[in-house]
Image (cartoon, rainbow, N blue to C red):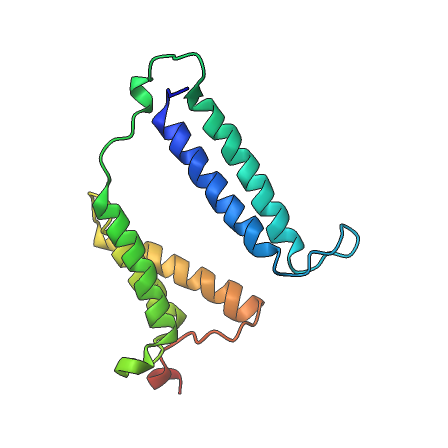
Length: 165
């Protein structure tokens, strides 16, 4: 048995592991039945489906008869710049939306957090156009405000506490 397509093999492995972890974590909750679903029913089913799909993808990346590896299926170098900026943008979003009391940073609200998220995440690419990023951030902030604050009436702070009170 040989790996003929690294991308398929490792993507399938990732899906199978994450799906299995979700399914394993869901058994701590009451699962119930299809007629009376408990809180663990959906995560368990989703985890199982994800693991099965992952195993199917993993199987397409493996050759049982010693077939030569596919050159287009090789995994290249890690793209560290996008990884750092995308993960960093999400971390900054979480800190800004909820604040960080341990260092005295008050909650900055959803609008400021979305602008920061958009600008930081846009640095992950090779091209940066501040005007286009500002327009995107404005559209995302307005859409999020309408969807979460106005329509769903969620209790998320929209503006910094020193502005909104």
